[in-house]
Length: 460
Image (cartoon, rainbow, N blue to C red; front, top):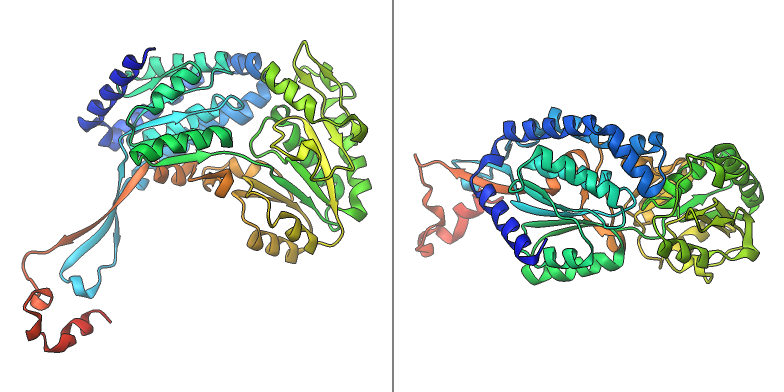
């Protein structure tokens, strides 16, 4: 698709939105139901595409991608009528007689830029919220996951006319060309570096942007934690999708006196969940491409590996790998890992955790394993991060009842469920003034207002 084609597509979507069809809640619900039917229809092909791009098993593909999308659509179909209603709020006495309310309205034409690690979920998930809020949308999926991108395009083209919902495939050139167009909102999921570029473009036109980024999400384990359960859950969350998950535990920060026990249990859990030879496990995924495969190998210090470390260049697979004796100066701690490599660092006293994390960039997620209520309270209160779990990992994003998003370096804005509807809506504040009376207190000349006594009475 040429730049001119994209300009024409964006203009067609603006005209379609201006016609007002998407303002109808019934229209939105019918669109969502049509999308639901297509996802169900192509369920097998979606899972096949995810396996081709990322080596995902059918179970993982449904649990983390297509099934999650279906859940989000169902939630919106049940709730969008309520979300779209105007909400009456109290009116100050000084504005008597009037009615005040908040009215959610769609932004208009939005651009959704999705990544390769969860290519179906992170393309269609935000789209569900955009449709529910009444927008038109262009989806730009990642070029790194071509099979899934093709499925996204097939489903969207079958469900919707391009002037309403469209998919633009391609690489950096297409990304750049789309960012040159005028949108009413841009929703981006991906790396911090690309997120900065997106924000530079949106700043030029003062276009609002939602950035879902990442970072080094810590997993804190204290001496009171149930170590066996902690290890089981950490292994699940860390090596899900071969570690290519933005909210995966990036590293473990473990209290020194339980580290040996935790390391032993993590190694045992890897064998239990992935087998003695994970590279032979048909349900274990692969790294997305050669570039990221080589990058990850460069982060592994063989002298500090206590489990795993093997790889297969032919299949782009790296074993679940555990590194001990790691410091913040090691290469593996200089960037978000985004792969199946788990470094373990330690601390002595729990208060040290706050000193260690104080000057670190704000992560997208934080996890804490503890039985100490005071530790739970202090971590959730004193450390800034996007969201997370206590005594589990990853699962906080798998709900329609809480918003998911980052803070600071890990992003801005959130979505899922009501939060997603709100993200793709602008809420207008409206005062509807009655005409059967008009209090004169606000009008000039002010010298007749007895020194503002009446005004002060109304504005107490």
